[in-house]
Structures are given as structure tokens and as C-alpha cells.
Image (cartoon, rainbow, N blue to C red):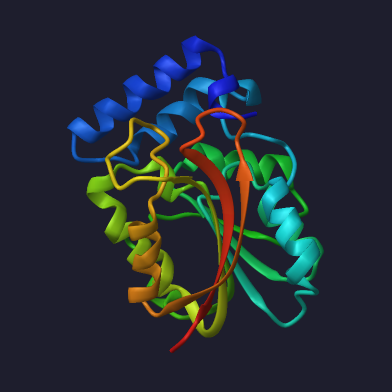
Amino acid sequence: MAFEQQPESLRQKVQQWSDEAIAQSDPTAWFERLYIAADGNTDQVPWARLDVHPHIQDWLSQHGGRGEGRAALVIGCGLGDDAEALAALGFAVTAFDIAPTAIAWCQKRFPESPVTYLVADLFKPQAAWLKRFDLVVECRDIQALPLTVRSEAIAAVASVVAPAGTLLVVTRLRATEAEPDGPPWPLSEQELAQFGAAGLQERQRQVFDLGGDPMIHQAWVEYAATG
């Protein structure tokens, strides 16, 4: 369910928790707070679909192929559905989230899963992950971070893509460079261009109308490592 379709009370909580985390110079702290407050109720997790994200599925259907012999990383994995979809295609999947409660929830949902679920911080990627993964999936995580840390987040995402690897970004896009209200904070074209500066070349994108603000769209963007 889209964030705008969530109950007003939940949107207000997310806004409050995000504002407080930013004020404390810890912009990712509110994710764990949200999962704890949800207390096992997926209706209280705005991005919980209990299925692979449709834009990821769309890309996989067109380009993903089989994953045997290929390592994949899912950034900010939430409740694990995207990671499980990759594992079902044969990828050796590592999936992480900053929120320990989210990872515990994944492990409870998928007790026999081949996915390696870990608590980790995007801003402090493990040294062993650098330039390691053949496929990296970043689905709506950067857009949940304020613009003050966006460049750092983009660089961290790019750093884990293998030299011949692929990055798939699913995100909201805004039509201007003006700072938007959030969360979420849709990405701009200048922000997307930072992936190029980090050694990735845009290969393809598909844009979807959200049916609301004509200045905001959603897209998947595929990048190829050039180094």
C-alpha cells in the first residue's frame, strides 16, 4: 500500500519519528522504532506488501533471468519478500536492514529460507561487501532518507556493486531539484546522476504514474557497473 493510502494517524507517526531522528542526527533511527510499534501488525508498516514489489517483479520478468552462481544484495530488506523472490530464482542472497526487529520478523516469516538476513547499516557496509555483488537491489530506501545524507547513501549503494554487476533502483522521482516534503523524499535527476559519478551507467528505466501529483512518478532504473 502506498504511503498516501495509509491511515492519517500512521502518516503522522512516521513524520514525527522521522523528524525526531533527523533532529538527533540519526536519520535511520526511526525504522526500528516503527517496527517495534507495529508489534507484528503489517498494516502498521507502510511499505509492507507481503509480496515482491511489483516493479522488482517487472524487472525480473524482463531482465533478471536465473540467479545460479550470482550473488545478490537486498538493501533495507524490510520484511523479506524481495529477497525471497531473488532466492527463488537461484541467487545467493544477502539481505540486511538497519532495524533488528525487521530482521527478526524476516527470520520468523521464512524459517527455512536460504537468504542470509543480517542487521547492518548502509552507511557502514561490511568491508567484504565492497564490489562483491552481481546484483544489488535498492527499493525505496534512499527516498526514505533526507537530502542531507543522500549523497553518502548513493555512494554506499554503488560501492557494493561488482565490477560487472547490476544495480536495480526502485524509487520515486521528482521533476524539480527543489527540496521536497517527506518522508518519502523522491529523488531528482541530479541525485540519480550521482550513481554515474560513482562508476555506474544507467542502462534502462521504466517510469510509472502514481496517479496523484503529476510532478512525482515512480520508476525502476537499471545501472551497469563500468569499472
